[in-house]
Image (cartoon, rainbow, N blue to C red; front, side):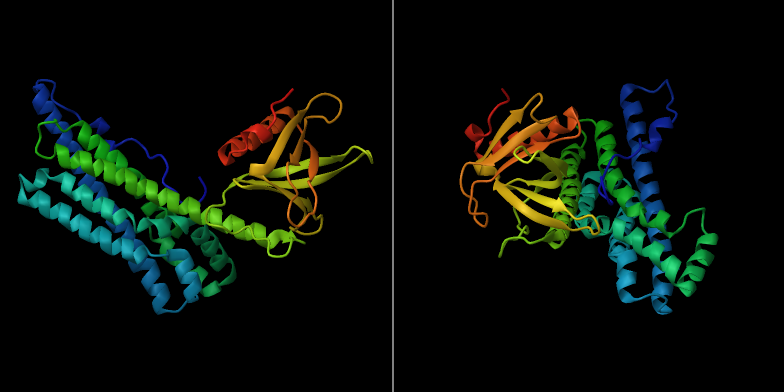
Length: 363
């Protein structure tokens, strides 16, 4: 995924833990569970120290010396100070529970419930990852004082630059579901912590998914804004911005004019509710509006053979506001695979919009 969305993480490190083969199955499971608990505590401490480096060695000195602008500071560090504070509190709670001994040291279900509550603050941070890297690169290139400071600090760290530390919260977010799953795997169903861990597993997974959904929504909205600004000659009042609008597929095809015997490139943007047709401008990243078809009112027809190589016809079953006609477009793709992708995605959109009878099957 783009940006800092939560993706797969590596296997837990405790997998290499040596267990005495003479132990009973119950003792073996208890040892494995304790190994997972130890890993959770150790890696959480490592993570807090990584956040401490970001905040204490980079963010605070840069801010105190006013080496970069407030916008650049926010662009690089986002809400990492908040994550640092929350992680410190969580790590302290883990350490206190371990120091207290049973039953507190066994109650990791309750601790992971706290993790689930903290993860909602990761959405803005993860969504900002691309911007953080870009801002860091620009600052290094354009600001000699900031570049000198960053280079000096990074030289004293363990082989990582600032970006190597900034990715740590994203990596930790990915790790939490694996840790709670592994702990649950080695927790007997009759264990006092089992039910709480089971609930925590659901809540941690839901929290991570919410972070991913939030990032995808921000990316969707950003792409819609980019497209809105790219189009030239849109009908009056025509806006691509909408809470329910989703971009399903975009790309460049050829529009065939059968009567004139010509073809021209067309940029297609298929949303869940409409297909937008535009002519790409050669000297700028702009698109000239050429028409649109509402998905709920479209008819799709395959065009095999000679008429149009890898082609299909898309038409509206009703007049389109702003065009004063029922548009008919004949498109051709560069390859059979590209055509198949467009046809399948158009049909899926039509089915979802309830226009199934208008999406004609291929002959």
